[in-house]
Image (cartoon, rainbow, N blue to C red):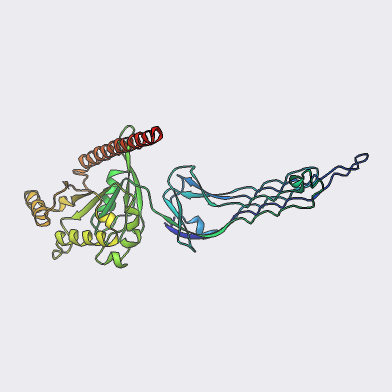
Length: 361
């Protein structure tokens, strides 16, 4: 299935039903009075999160969505039926913007989460609601209001805990195959990966994380060169980046250090937030380097980079060093989640104290 991460759709909420002007007419009841009912509310349009969807490809085939109009009110104080809501299922990680105003309406982040994107029209009021002691036979009713209509720009940012970053042919797809059940295409030429691939890494029972593999980044990616810039946005939601480096490039003139520096610069140019994300250096393809030269080569790369963060030496093809790396990632993610919960609890507690203090004053 083709990976589609951007789409534009037209949505229209239902109009509210008009109120009714009616009077009770029955035998032996000469002054029945008004009995016109209210109209029904128009249906609204919602986006609904769905974990079974991975792309926005469905919106390439259907672009128009409309909720039902509310029915008009009727006599005998009968209220019109409300219009049915329109529910549009979307993958998690979808950001919705109004195309005309560029306003961010919201994000779909949880399964079955409902995001209101167009409000249905309000019902009209029947003449029975205008009855009073001074106006016992009102001939007045209000029309239902119009439902909202919008053109939405939808952008998908995949939800993953870990993102793989690196030049083309750095071994990212091989790594995700070794770490998870995902089976992206692997070949001995650059730009094998043409769209993001997600894999679930199961470290042990009830301990797992999601890893994302995006197309390789090249120099000038932040300005639109290559495929990587098109998918760099998918790395912005990750909590950790693994910078994969080919220590045995097919072209001996290629310097791994220069490649790391190039990608680091591209990340900062694309987004300050992405440039500051936690990043681990993973030196890959050690199986192509003689054993007696592996340590020396890796130490040289780390020294010339002046790298201060974690460094791992692996062979994704032979799965050497992969398991310890996955264990370290799992521990890091669990610790990060624990610290985030503690910080949130402290902030909540402090805000509660301040609120209580204000109330006492």
